[in-house]
Image 1: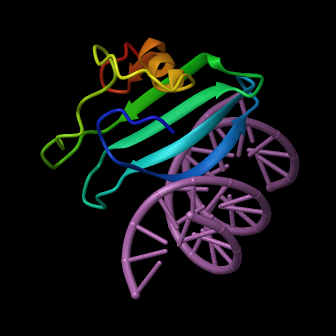
Image 2: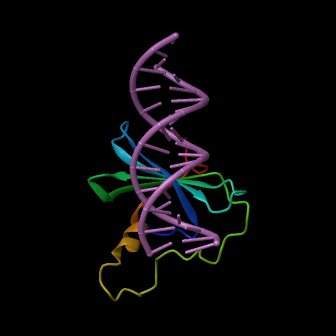
Image 3: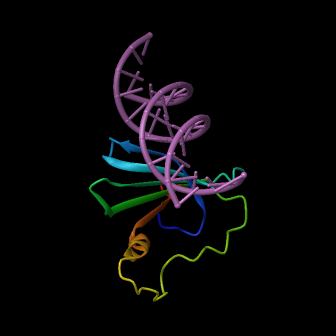
Length: 99
DNA sequence: AGCCTTTGACCAGCG
DNA sequence: TCGCTGGTCAAAGGC
């Protein structure tokens, strides 16, 4: 599970037949934080089509972990492209979406 | 001991 | 009103 700069706690996972995709439900580690995150992907292609939906906003200062991949050059082992793939995925924000 | 992850069941809203 | 889907919470296991 790649990080996006915040800490999340998974509280559920369901298969949405409507779109034929898997959806994971994440919540901010802080109970007082109204930030939520939903991640959906194809069960046959987890890296082919990843969708992230952010809901609400954090009520606490952003942690210093806000350093997503993009200009590091720390690739050495060979196989850590999961994080690289993550930055290539489409990120949808619940409050920034035209929905 | 504490925290995180995973699965199932239950509840609410909509058609 | 019933059925279905989506979403959330709780409990157990592992690290």
